[in-house]
Structure formats: C-alpha cells, structure tokens
Length: 115
Length: 112
Image (tube, rainbow over all chains, first blue to last red; front, side, top):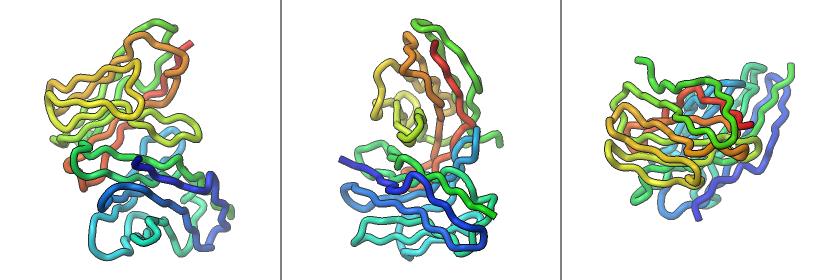
C-alpha cells in the first residue's frame, strides 16, 4: 500500500537554530513529493516539491528539502528557524499512473519555534 | 484569480440531515479532490476527479457522493449526516499529476 510517514508529531526548535521535519514514503515507482504548511484555521499552502533532477529542492520562505531515494525520505529543512514558522507541516506523495494523481498525506508534524 | 473557493466555512447539522459542500476553482484545473482532516490523522481522500464527468472513490468515501458536471465545480454531498462526519473538509485542485495542489480554506462541519 502507498503510504507517507511523519515520525514526529511535534518538533520544538529555538529561533535561529536549524530545523528538520522528517518524512518517509512507500510507493510503487518514482514518486512526486510535496511539502505543505497549514496555519491555524487556514487551508494548506504549498511549500516545495520534488519531481525529478537535483535531490535538493528549494521552496518558499527559505525552506528546502532533500530527496533520498535509497532511504525513501524527503526531509524538510531550514537553516535558521523563525517564530513565524510555527505551524503544522504535511508531507505528501502523488502516485503516478492509474491513480488519478491522488495525493497521499502524512499525519502532520506540529512545528513550534520558541524565541 | 480567486483560486479554490469553498462554501460554507462553517456548518452545524443534525444527525440524518443532508447537505452539499460547494467547491469551485477558476484555474481550469483538471484534477479536483475532497479531503477530510481529523486530528492526528492527516488528510484523508474522500473522492477525486480527473476531469468533467469522471469521479472515483478515495480512501474514505462512505456516506459521501460527488459529481463533476463542469471543470470548475466539484460539490461534495453528505447523504445522511452522522457524528462521525464531524471534521474539517478541504477541496483541492491541480493542473497536472506533477504539479502542486491548491487548497480551499476549508469547511468546518459539526454533526450533532
């Protein structure tokens, strides 16, 4: 079965420190991978995606993510966290072929950045 | 562009009532989907559509119906509301399978 796992329900980081939000996936074939952020009482906003090519992808608000095919991971990173980065983060994978482009989400990781 | 518009934003239903959650997008996207978000469970796919006239079931379709008569609109119908359908519902659309999805602001539904 296709699945996405975010092993940490919550990540706590001090402002100015680097942050990592972890994501692993299990799909057949080559995946399309996405990160979304959700602020309270809002919809999901797109941060970045991996389709093909360079394993390090850069996205909005200074975030980046590293695709690791051998470890089936797509961890989200930021060199220096801001208090305003505090939000709920979702990793998602889109299945190719015969699946209608369905997005499969992880359960979400709550990021808390303290001053 | 308005993007993806969902109505209503909030709704309270009594058990057994029916209602339709509206979703419209103005980006001419082919792919549209409905998700429900529950604490600790991420977003689960209810139904999706790859174009007008084409719909299919997602992970949790029971109790919900959809139709896609136009590219722009993808309404979600609750046939007979149950307390287990208390959730936040999101509609999303995307242009292609390898492009990002755009989400509506969500509908917070409470069934009492």
